[in-house]
Structures are given as C-alpha cells and as structure tokens.
Image (cartoon, rainbow, N blue to C red; front, side, top):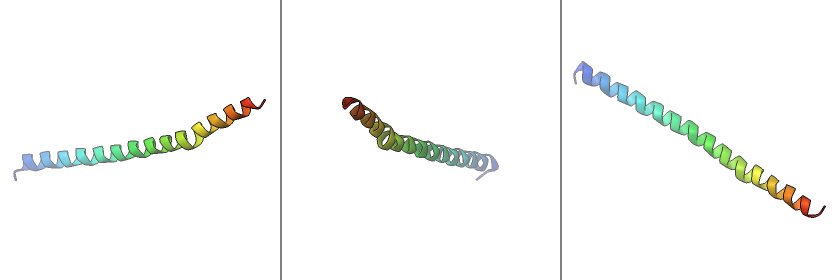
Length: 55
C-alpha cells in the first residue's frame, strides 16, 4: 500500500472512530433524557393532576 493510500485509510479509520464515539455519547444522553421523561416528568404530571382533582 503506498503512503497516500495508507494515509487515506488512517483518516477514514479516525473519522469512523470519531463517529462511533459521537454516536455513543448522543445515545447515552438520549437514553438518560428518555429515562427522566418517563420515570420523573410524566409521573410528576400525573401526581400534580391527581392532587388537583381532590382540592
């Protein structure tokens, strides 16, 4: 493999690695926000709404 092709391959590998890292980071953030939404925000909405019904 000549030097230009090797450099191009290394560049592509670095881009792929960066993309995987970015994807992993965004996925973790999304999962955390989704968890908070379904297990904190939504239950709080129902708790507030149910409390208002009995006032």
